[in-house]
Length: 157
Image (cartoon, rainbow, N blue to C red; front, side, top):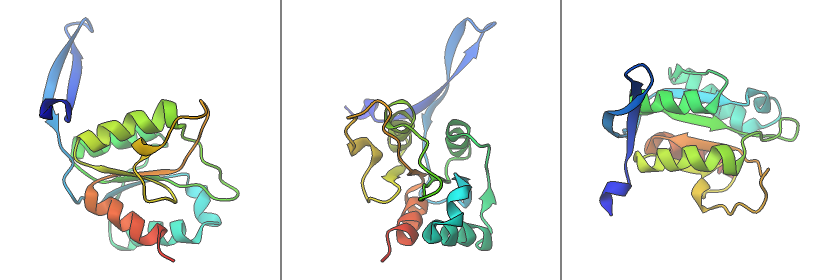
């Protein structure tokens, strides 16, 4: 049913005793020049990620970086777009867990009209099977066109 495929915002009100719908629908626009790069240590030994971060900077994207996936993704919802990445490398391993972090936020992003992908595989994070409670992975979440730019850099030969 179409009603189930939306992301909406609720706010705790009345002395923190009642939840109220504050935005009935959160939609990510296809493009927005805001980036939140996680695990920047990986740029040291992941040349593709390094080139992508440099592209965002040289193309005058606005940097949004809190050090946490949830606040950075919520910022995308508040601003109606952008891109969040958290990429690993040989020396900077993936930290985000599929079951507890990646799948939950990925579902919200996709229901808001955004796109998710695994860091090295062109596949929605929602298509991965939870076969280990501690399975970790790198990801990219965000506006459709911004995630496509990520794929163009990261999945090129």
